[in-house]
Length: 77
Image 1 (cartoon, rainbow, N blue to C red):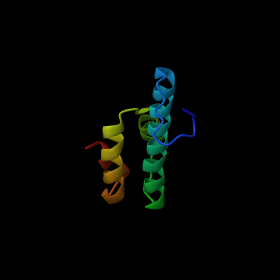
Image 2 (image 1 turned 180 degrees about the vertical axis):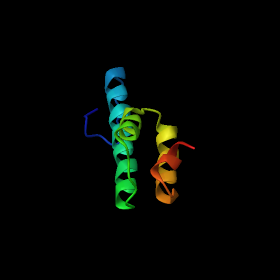
Image 3 (image 1 turned 90 degrees about the vertical axis):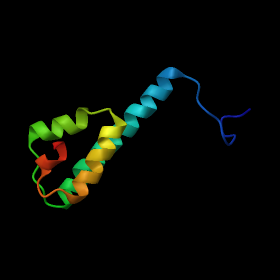
């Protein structure tokens, strides 16, 4: 089997962990981009909390809330 073969799954735990962390980091950045695009002010503490989060489910919830929240701090309600 070659690396380019369709359906190949990486078996390495460090790779999977790194991939998950990268995905979480990208989603956290998306949350911040949505808040910024909507003109909502984000404190340094809030930005740090969002960027430090690695829980994909939590980040998904925040991303949805970022699209409709009246204030950035409503993300954490």
